[in-house]
Length: 219
Image (cartoon, rainbow, N blue to C red; front, side, top):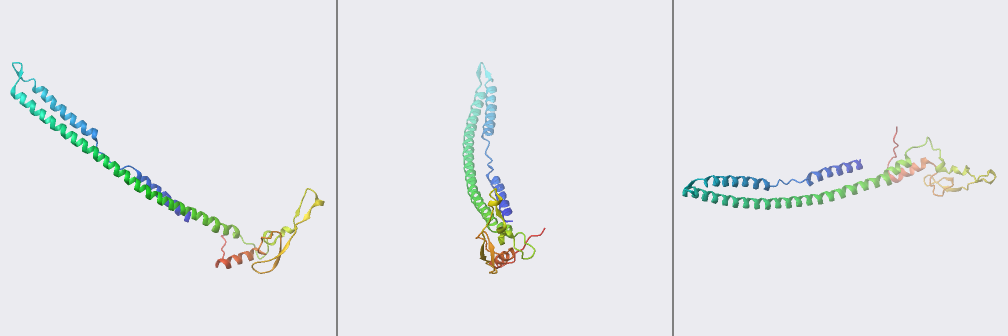
């Protein structure tokens, strides 16, 4: 359950990171601004061109020239507005990019910190299962009927023979007497690391040390 929870939190953290790391900057379209102002200026210049055709005796009339000059003033003003708006848009775009970069950096730190916590949690869960839960289950997963000792606990391997490819050379393994750590009875063992005379004693000792009843899963 802890492993599943840790994996789920890591998955949610990844989704959060993708969501926050996605750029959300809606920049001003400087190309569109330049295009619109260029169209307006060309329209004014076309008006000047048409007015310059209004002539009297080969010379542009005074009224037409005044209109041309007025239009030129408008064109100059439009260009000033274009430059101002274009520069302002570039500066605002730069600020938004910087803010977005700072936002990503901040969320990146949060995500890295949370990922570290989740990874450490996962390592802890795996270590817990490896050295405690699964170890106990593997050791006491099944119980024999009654108190009959098994080969591993009793040391029944004493009856086994070492075969050196010659029956005549076979010899019996040596056994030693050892007291059971639970009931105190002596029993024969080959492996001196054996501590219990039966699985029942092993289970009772485990239950006494852990102050709880050992439960065995049934199928």
